[in-house]
Length: 550
Image (spheres, rainbow, N blue to C red):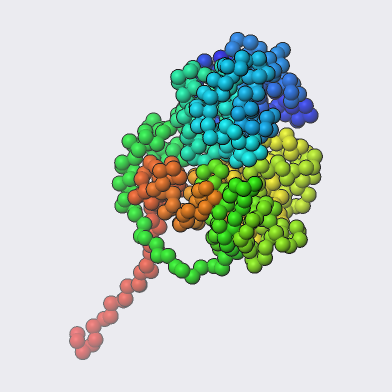
């Protein structure tokens, strides 16, 4: 269904190709997962499939791209609308209608689908993706996750044979992501649709893939069965990392398969069960104090009397379903979004009541759409200060200073905005989905930066659906539902036994193992350091017998 032969592609003005001598074959009815580091060319590869590259992007294409037997070289993207459905990294950028139902129907209207068939197709898509409740909603009221599901539905409504998805679960909570991926799996298995999907959160999708296309840092593609490609790949989900550590053969790709192999590992961990820790009431002073904050939009209560604190040196994760009010809360805390009632204090001051420069020094906010904060024409111009460049180099080494921010991938733009915000040296850091679009290496760097910020006494509030990242960095997890704060506690307590929020390692080993991450397992299995040797006392010389005893 999809075939790339010796494809090399270079953007106009770029010093080197994004893709180099790339070969790829995806058979009809297969789900192919595209993986690789941030900026490795995944989005470019996907846009080749419907001709957006090079017809829309410009650039030089060498080699052959064929979809359903036809070449994309001489057919513009509009000619592929009934063959290829495409959803980009920023779904809102493709919306044209004002209501969800109208957005789902728009593509079919352009293709001349009969009204009766159009209505039936819209109903099918609403049921398939579980978004029937969104039917009459205004597009501007959708959360990031809701918008992503609507975008997928709009692509499906035209009845394509190939579905191309760029980071389809990046803005979805774990439950919604499972629902969407289950729907995609049904399209593949029951309807024979061909799906090409790029995804950084491999832990969510790898078990569904028939084949993986891994793009290395040279722009070359390596394709094969998932277990073979991931065996030595520099990027891998926690389940594969755990399999490597435990020496499992073959490497499991699903939690179910891993649990079948995990009994000996559980026994080893049982022998090293840590002693329970004793909680202490006295801790560092709070930096963030939120009391009874309520946010109401046009009669809709997005946040309902939320109260909590985040202490100096603490990393707190705020989690919950899409639309539960998390983003509305952090925008209200920063003083940019509306706050109907309640109080916010950061180091004793309200960011909404001080000069913007002072507000930036109190709290940095990285939004879930980081490109909204970028407006200059190069990375170097955006960075300006040396501190920003240093932070960006840690988060995203090797980025071209001359590159236009709009030409960066979603993950690269996020890293740039994070660097810009941290350069102000804020007392509190508010991050809304900061791992969206980041590969595992970039997440490692982000984790180090957040821990460094906490070590400096800053308070970090992390709004995230990324349970694996929360398990690695958060000291405490708080959850929201329908605008209310419903639970809070230590990360291990909140995540380990949760059927929805548990990370992969906890699902495999069970909550009794007291391990949330592969690093937790590695530390537990490491041999205890040998006790320092005691210095030996020199032997006392034998005294000769006393003369009177002789």
